Amino acid sequence: MRKRLSGALAFVLAAFAAPAHAHLASTGFGDFYDGIAHVLITPEDLLVVIAAALLAGQRGTTAARLAALALPVSWLIGGLVGSRWPLMSDQALLTTLTFAIAGLMVALDRRLHVTVVIAVAVIAGLLHGLANGPTMTPAGIGLQGLIGAISAVCVLTLLLSSQIAMLTRDWHRIAVRVAGSWIAASGLLMFGWLYQSAV
Image (cartoon, rainbow, N blue to C red; front, side):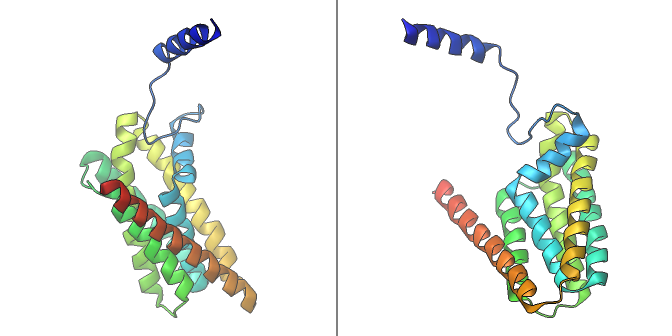
């Protein structure tokens, strides 16, 4: 009797459930906050922001400031283009590639010129924006959600890169490199998962 009652209750709840959005979480506070939450709970977006901020912070305050501007602006441009013309069909592969490469660059800690760091931030921002735009428009959060996502990207990049730029001790720099290697390793695991799901 209990099993039948539980089954009937589950059926009724499922019949009246709110529609689910496959890629966006609803915070209940509005589109702007949904955009912020999207960046914070989407692993490939969060990891690329962390990796780009770590990379910029390693190269000093100038690179940190420029990356804090370049990453969100390019993300916004990519998001606007992506919401209008969905161009990226294989977005998981490209977004995984961006954070894996950025993480690897952090782990290697090479003396890169500031323009290389900014180029990485711009490419990552454009690709992730192009991937985010098409997912936000069908969910109905549109421009406000995109601005929320950009705000989260900007604040995270600014805070993290400025803190990393101030680190002077050797063990601090080693910890940053270890964090980069973990991000790169996460990318390799993601590539394995994508390959497995494609086979």
